[in-house]
Length: 238
Picture 1 (cartoon, helix red, strand yellow):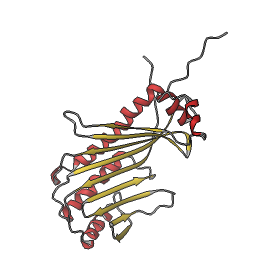
Picture 2: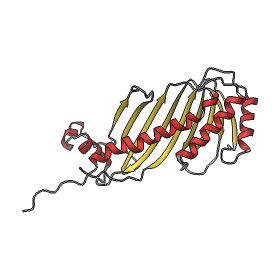
Picture 3: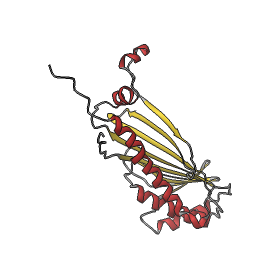
């Protein structure tokens, strides 16, 4: 049996969106959420902004493409940490803490559904170009087959959907692609949907479901890629 490579993936984005029954979104009540979060530096947000599409709490950073925010909309809560380096366990604690306060102060009676997103980058062990690895090795497409396009392939990827099965209601939509900013890196996204409703007393399941999404990437997706990420076999010596 071939040993699978051991990867050190980099998590670049953690996102959760929680769907709830429509409410009247009142800035004063959301300001109360902001004030209470500010009492705990680990979960605080610096800025408060009201816009047509909702009310957003943000942390300001100087790093490019970085986002740290929670957005309250009439029918959902959106929490995002992108390029902040936050670990999944820290994000899960933030997710639970922010939601508990919001549910209480905004009188949200139930979380109807959840969607959790994990995006990661990983370098293949035996291939310098992720397009060559994904197209030529994982999908077994000979390079000459792309000649019909009369131009080079800049990005290549595949999409997979894993439905709910008996005993598990989570659906995983997977994207595995080359990464334009680093030819060697493979970009991985898991958008996991959970449709079991949660009452305010059971919000710890939010963090558990984010961790399940993270685990699906680390174990299932990387395990799948690892079966193909093997050193090319050498031909017989002359």
